[in-house]
Image 1 (spheres, rainbow, N blue to C red):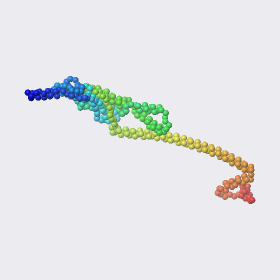
Image 2: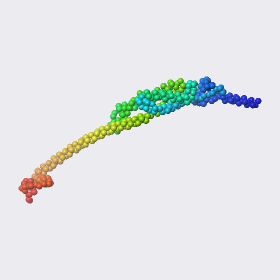
Image 3: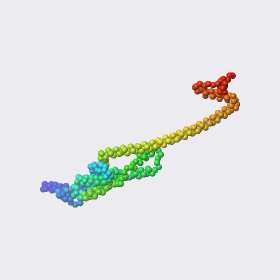
Image 4: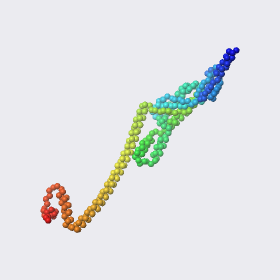
Length: 323
């Protein structure tokens, strides 16, 4: 009798163990019987019941899941080969569809690989490279504002402005990176819906040039920097010419003013000398004649050469005159 009780208790425990299961937070479950889904998906956390031995429980994640694609080489519309690395977030919204179509997360990843890679390739290849790199044309708006502002007079500021203005030569975007991501989401979401998968978002995580294109891009960047440098040099040379021109003009004005003042002083001095000579001549004509003759002797005899002078001439009368 005791053995029957123990056996009965063991059977009850076994039945309870096989008929009760716990659903943790963040998971959802399906009950299957011989591989066939029974009932609705179970999403509420806690204890739940099933038929022992004949029914099984399959658990699935209810949280937002991440998909990371492999970097893929894609040609853009303007024939530039780039490596694109895409990431996405998704979740299971229809568990019955999900279990019947892709079975589990590994099957879902295979579906995501095929659909997202294909949609991304089609979207990127139908647009120019700039659409995948930039989001908006805000740069051009900033350039327009700077161009409308008064031009600076400082050479350094002017050179910096010239450097910024060359960015206006880059290509404008019609869609932008975020818009391309939205296009990928819209197309891929429709294709994933039959599998019970909701695509939340897609991000172009990394974009890089293919090696041969990268070398050409670097060469173009070097050429662009050289062109900017030459443009700034031309601005500097123009400023140098302006400074030199102003310097020469100021120098000529200073020299002209100095010459005018020197002539005025010279004129005043000569007038004063004439006045003094006139007074001296008026006071003592003989003395005036004597001093002027001495000055003449100094100028004549200072030069090297031979002079033949008459001893009774007017010029030498002060040299030959005896006291």
